[in-house]
Structures are given as structure tokens and as C-alpha cells.
Length: 140
Image 1 (tube, one colour):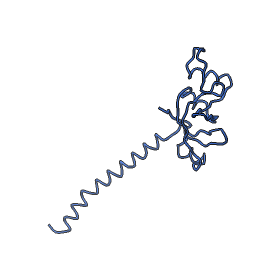
Image 2: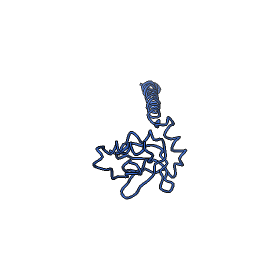
Image 3: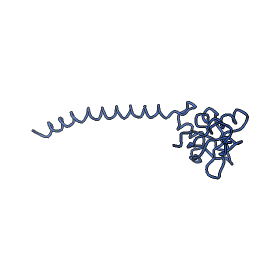
């Protein structure tokens, strides 16, 4: 075979493979963007940009309230989740306890309700002793 036939054969085989690879790359990129939507409905990248991504940090600790902190009354008959939610309903604010540090949480209460009384990882910006929450996830 001469060189032009080899080139034609190689081109014939490689072109469909490149088209399939490009299609799969676009599909996976679309799926990744769809799954990267935060609870607020905004893409995570846009939320991080809005929170000044240069100051974005990740904090881990226990989501609780500023009344009980990490010491819920044992004789109340409630578990930490129930106690935290009750205290918030009665006017307390959500709090993240990380070791000996306590941070007030600024964001939608619905974000914190699902992880009340549990360990969590929170991405946000710290201003004083308040974390402006961008995203939240289970700390397990």
C-alpha cells in the first residue's frame, strides 16, 4: 500500500473515535454542571464567585444553636437534632462549633435544618465570628 492509502485508513478510523470522545466530553460536562447546582438553585461556581472566592474557606464541626451550643440537656428527652431545632424555633440562631471555636451561621435556615445536631462541612466566608454560608454538606 502506498502512503496515501495508509493515511486515508488512519483518518477513517480516528475521525469517528474523536467525534465520540468529544460527544462524551460534552455529555459529562453537562451532567457535572447539572449536579453542581446548590440548594439555592444557583450554580456553585456563581455562588462561590458572589462570596469572593479568594476568601472562601471550608469549616468542619457540629451544627447546633447558640443557646445550647454543643451541650444539650441530657434529661430533656430530646436528641441533639431535636433540641437544636426546638431552640432555633424558639429564637436561637444556628451555630457551628469547631473545637473550642463557635461561629454564627448566616444563610437560609432550611440549609441547616437537615444537618441540625450533626457534624457538617461548610464552605463560606468568615466575617468576624460569622460564616456566610455558600454550601453545606454532611461531615461524615
